[in-house]
Image 1: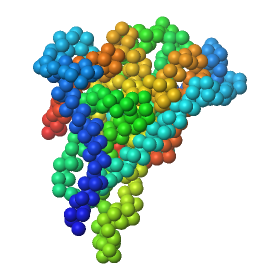
Image 2: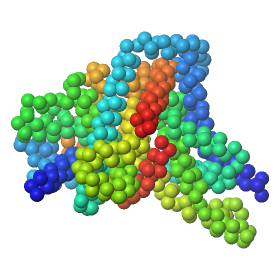
Image 3: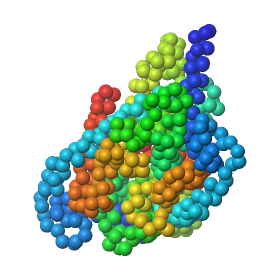
Image 4: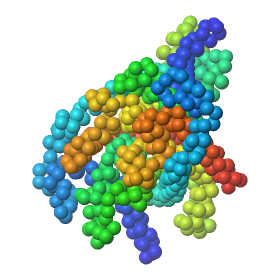
Length: 292
Length: 277
């Protein structure tokens, strides 16, 4: 019986294991090994070149500029999403009307569900210089001098994409916070109220410390999302104007699928993975310390 | 009293502001998808359409803009991905959670470890592997990439659920002489349907809107899925806002329907997924 069970188990596990090998084990090892070769993706032949790929990228000014943009994008969107997300969640949580509460909870998550392509094209349309909704509103409000081609201007393109990114993903943060807030015992909140705590005090002294666990989850999820950002940027500006929105995700894509330098692209992918890993570990560490 | 009133008012202002910022873009999309370009460009602009609603925009998007082709492709790819993925991960997660063969802890750890790997580490070798097998520019290649990429999370969620299955019914069934497969098929499988629903809904939303893999593997227009197809749609209808927005609305409807019908499952899936930390 046990033998049969074991045999059956491995039979059940076989398809998943094959996929694991084909889509994780093989590509990860290939990536690491090939990053030390001059392999170009087309010939089977390759030579060992040691750290040369890494050195090429290390001395590439474009790589550092993209890394800077990626970090800026990730940190600003993460902080905006976490802080705003907390405030909005607290606001929805403290609404008296159950109906509004429900409605807002459903509504705020809808942009998360919207396909990235829809979000991008919709906002490109709304931010367009000619008949874009945003410029029209500015004119209506008497702020016409601010109107511009938001995505065609290197000084505003990045900020606009960060704003759209926050608009799309803040629902995720808010939902996590609300779910966590609902688990805070009513007695804690009541006794704080009796002690005369106002809304601000309540938020800062009761909710914030009780929610550090979920803050960490929210922070890290948006951080990883920001560091990997690709879809919205690719579809809204393609990395331009100039290089003003070229983040690492875009750069890896271009290196591989436009210039066909697969070796360099793979190396960059590994570096991006290391950046993500290190920053995740650092933020976990920092938040764990604050908690203790 | 007046302070209370003020607080109440500021509450309402905030409430409307948040709702407006979230919903206005979507409202704009839906309302303008029913207007002619001339009507959209009228100055001063108005949100509500004036004149007749242009249902033709939808017909144009469907036929001339080829949304019908992209839509069918998306349905095929999403449907096949969900079906194959569900079978593969259910079998694996069940074996890991229920039968616990020798080495099952290591295997489970390996599947979990895939959640740590970012796509940047795997994309290029997988792309080249698909090219090797002549699977670029095919739906099969795209489906394989989606199924393969999603196994970690799905196995994790289902296995955790299988761990909680009750044992009593199984004991009774064993006494009745039911074999392993019988117990799996007629006792346990019906019990894990809820978690399978969560997994399918999460995969549906992910695959339906997936862009990157479609971008790098599909270049033939007749094979494109909706998110990718919309992109040439944009350059084609750059100045025909109504048709473009009709196209965007068509893509949005299936995701929205699934979300509004099953929003309870979304919260469940998300909270279950986030516990891994």
